[in-house]
Length: 74
Image 1 (cartoon, rainbow, N blue to C red):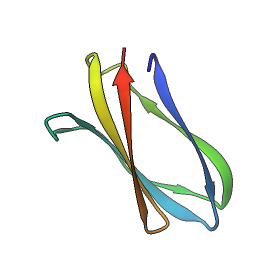
Image 2: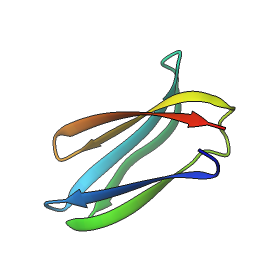
Image 3: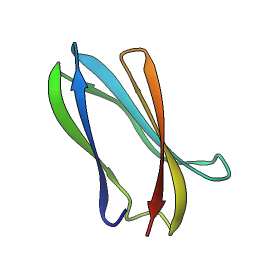
Image 4: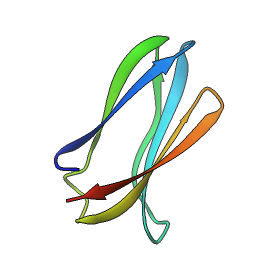
């Protein structure tokens, strides 16, 4: 990833979305708290400029689901 990390989503109902980024030592390095979004298709961005180069894990929680996505900051 160079610049911002973009996440596209589709929500079946108005929901809160929580985004957190962890380094490989399980230290939370980005916390976007809860973002409220209306139902339908949308997009979010996570600013990665503050992150050093390396491997990270993005945790996304929405509609009682949790997803973990690995990404490499160049």
